[in-house]
Length: 146
Image (cartoon, rainbow, N blue to C red; front, side):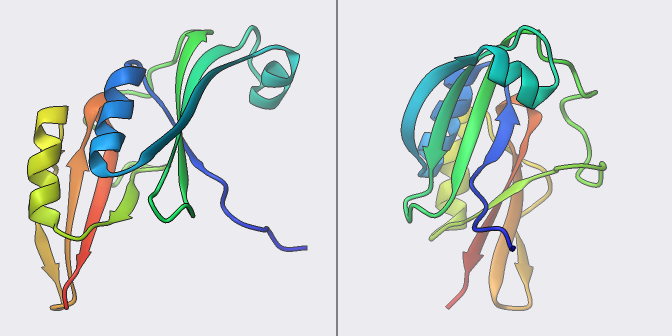
């Protein structure tokens, strides 16, 4: 049996409001917010006393979702420095296709986004860049050139 689909990508954050604002400005739609706690949450995560606030966002095409989680308990554990380099082991970015990369970067700056490197051209077919958002996560942007 094969998997059916990728349901969502999860990111743990400290400031849920700022992270939601960041991804809404990027173009995602907030599906809803809620709280998760109880025995099933403890079983699933392998943690005791889980209580977290979550926000679920989806891409405009409805095919991809992002779950942001703010842990009330147990407290979120630091995975090291926030501005980790791109080549660190583990999940390092979420990539989004955009219509206008320069406009998107400009719109995201007031929400704490900073370019990790520069906007780069890939073989005349794409403009690509990585933004570091609030909380230190990296978001990739790709604009297909026509």
